[in-house]
Amino acid sequence: MPPDLATRVTDFIVILAREGGTAVDAGKEPPGDPMDDLGVRYGVQVPGEPVIIEYTVYRDIREFRIPVLVWFH
Image 1 (cartoon, one colour):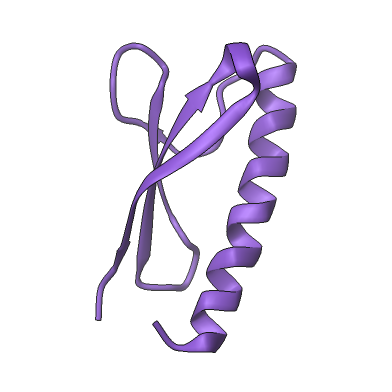
Image 2: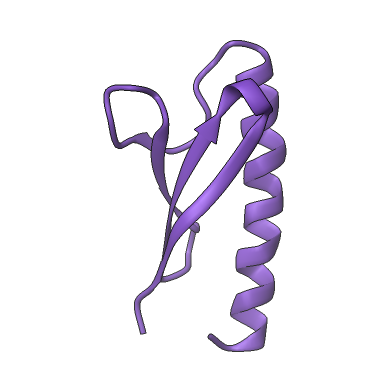
């Protein structure tokens, strides 16, 4: 991944974690599309970039994890 794209993706992940954490703390759904019926897996595309992120939400320990990051090159 080119360094400039990596920087944009990293910046997006930081914003995603901040906004998602705020939503979860408020009892709302985090950003992205639900990918299961349990409210654990979500998918989101980095706007304007060929990158898709799948992340999981662990509400009890206030943590997001990114097991899948796809860069279409």
